Image 1 (cartoon, rainbow, N blue to C red):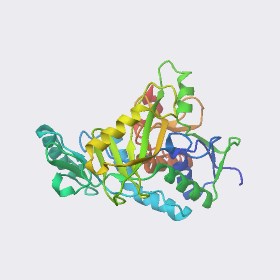
Image 2 (image 1 turned 30 degrees about the vertical axis):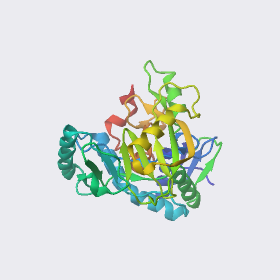
Image 3 (image 1 turned 45 degrees about the vertical axis):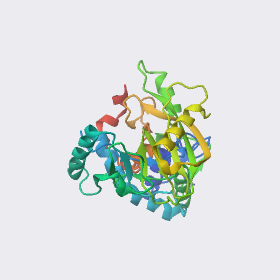
Image 4 (image 1 turned 90 degrees about the horizontal axis):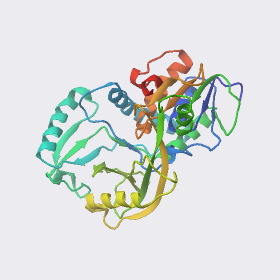
Length: 348
């Protein structure tokens, strides 16, 4: 490969997505990661691309909405280039409604979604009986059904991006010198480095644990569920992803334990259709969380003249298409469309 126009350090979801977007605009791109693609928190199993509730609109919710709307086209382009499925599907989501107060809130949000989601998706309240046997138990007898929520398989999505990047002439290597414009997308490692030179914590790692289950049901195109604070996501490969924990204190970042067992038990209790499900995979990893909780995009706080794309705690895969767009605008065109809440200074 000739000298790179852009060097990206970090082959997680942000680094790979930005690399793909830069390549798609004709840049020469090299991704550098000594551990390989998807080796960190991007190598999980859950893959819930779920929107924020349609109320109290702000720049973070609007950015995420745009990204979720872009997602189908983004992933179809990746899959067409590399020939590997990401497992993407906009299958929607069901959520149980606990009581009369929650029912009133959900009905109000159905009205605000009409304006905020601009006709691209719906948020509605439906009788639980209408949802069939896959529906979670709902104390009120009603469910929230939205059509914006999507799913993809994190590991397959990273593999799809690797295939597309390689097919487009990009490189993914364990080591290389800095060439061209530099972007850091190294997750928790970079947050910890920034913490050492700042008086206030810039960001931290939050451990998450998830699992994959198998059930004797055809659920490939079933909506995902959010019940008892647990994401339950049917994937295209026939597995059901369950997750996840949020652990600020932990000893082993990659071990699973009884905290995951409790999450699985809550899922089984909330969804009768999961009775008898077999656990076929258990995963743990540490996800980067900025102080502001939003993605961190823009000028790198340490490396002068270089850039950062980090954070995206729990919503990185959902944010990735839009993050890739705005960072590619910045890297290749010097066009800065990053929301103020996402800039590094918002996390100081």
